[in-house]
Image 1: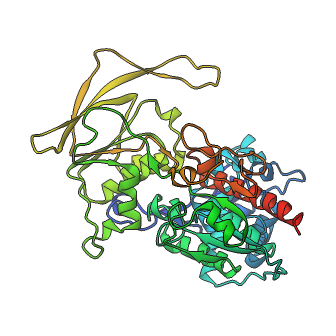
Image 2 (image 1 turned 180 degrees about the vertical axis):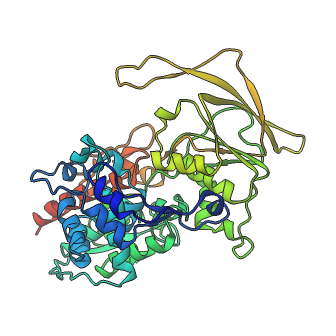
Image 3 (image 1 turned 90 degrees about the vertical axis):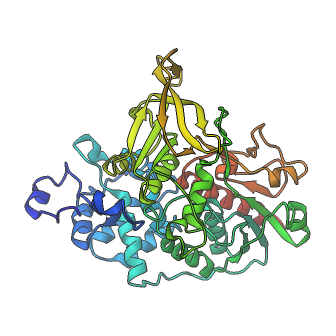
Length: 475
């Protein structure tokens, strides 16, 4: 674990260095699926909160996609008034324990912190997590003014971060909200995509329980587009519908050997590990074989989640193959560091060209080619270019593809008049989430393509407000 806070160092470096956070040591954590980051102690949280300058025109708020009053909740931490702190956060964010763990604060609120000019920004995400954890551990009850019911029913499809946010916001405004989820448990990508060591499922359940206590009706095992269509929901009396079904359809690599045994999409691999608890086999009846050597294709958080899960399943070696360099990796810097600490070998500027198998149809190796980056284009992105004749073969037992996901087309294919892109993304107004059908809204990955938890929540908040404005005008 990290060393305890040194008070003299804390005083001396208050405005330049943030307070470090406790983590499991790498050699310990690779042998378990327990949460890697252990969170702040109260002493550490108070020290970090004391670094906030409480700016009059706080730029950090502008960097928060859901608009949390960051200086205000941090002020309450310094006063040890954790009930007020969590209440302030939940004015805008119904999933703080989740956001405090998985949201890229370094690219959002913390990026705009004024202390960035001197050193480290205030660790806003860690403080948000701390307050949310205190709320749960001490069973703090947040007073919730009961909204006057307006008897208007809203259907929310998909219990991921976008759907949960819409449901919570509308319930607080007095709407009768029913949340339909295709899986047997709520949470969407939070439960099937993000591993236990990064986001414990008990945390997700606690956040979902809070939303249910707001009056939201949860209906699992309800695949909309099969069980009911959008038209059926309107016939059942729902006055508005929000679609937040995410992006759960994996993209293919389109290289020879992709159908060999031992090749997984990251989506399938992580669902087996996370949702079906393959890491607890045989207690849970979902086996998953990884062999001695695993290669993961991709450079995002999903790729790192798959790689770090594989090493915990007992494989001897895990490689991460990414066609650009480390600076171009879309994954969070913290997760890249964690992966490197855990012994995952990065094979940067490489791309797979062929998966090789034996006479039994099982993976034995992967062929890859070395890449070079072009000069930046107009968007600043550098294009990877294959270097002819640089093909190399790497012996592996398992290949996991994490090159992206697209929306499942079931609702799009069963809803007449719903406009989509060629890739199945639902076309919406970016400010309201309104689709081409009256009273139908969408948000999250289904409307943007694969993105972050907090961006899905942002679109959910916008849609909830738009649904409220629309229904307020209806008799």
